[in-house]
Structure formats: C-alpha cells, structure tokens
Length: 76
Image 1 (cartoon, helix red, strand yellow):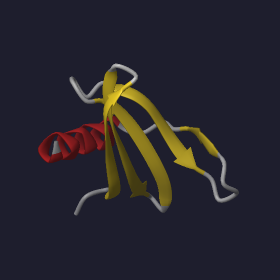
Image 2 (cartoon, rainbow, N blue to C red):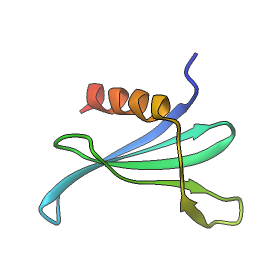
Image 3 (cartoon, rainbow, N blue to C red):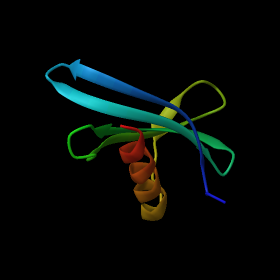
Image 4 (cartoon, rainbow, N blue to C red):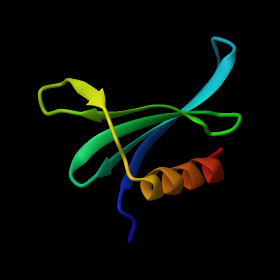
C-alpha cells in the first residue's frame, strides 16, 4: 500500500511558456499539492493545506516525492 493517495492531477500546457503538472494528494491525513515542470519533473513547489484554508510550504520525504514523480510520469 502506498504512503499517499493521489486525488487529482492538472497538466498546464503552454502556461507562461512552460508546461507544469500539479498533483494533489493525501499523506498522513493531510492534503498536499506538488507542482513539477512537465519537461523534466523538477519540483517547482510543494504545499500542505491547513484546516483553516491556508497553505504552507511543505517538506516531504524523498521517497514520497519520487513515488509521486513516477506516478505522474506514467500518466503524462
């Protein structure tokens, strides 16, 4: 069983000259969002959403990031 559950993935084609992929997922009962450059899946940003509607920069373990990167690569 995976340590996260992927809920949504958005591919922004031709956004501001770059293409990005944003994946929303749940990990340890918290909701996260991670954005990659589509070309090489370099991380652009990672956010954790708080219960009050705010978001903060997130720090995730490397194995979670790599697993999500693999899932995104398979879907694009």
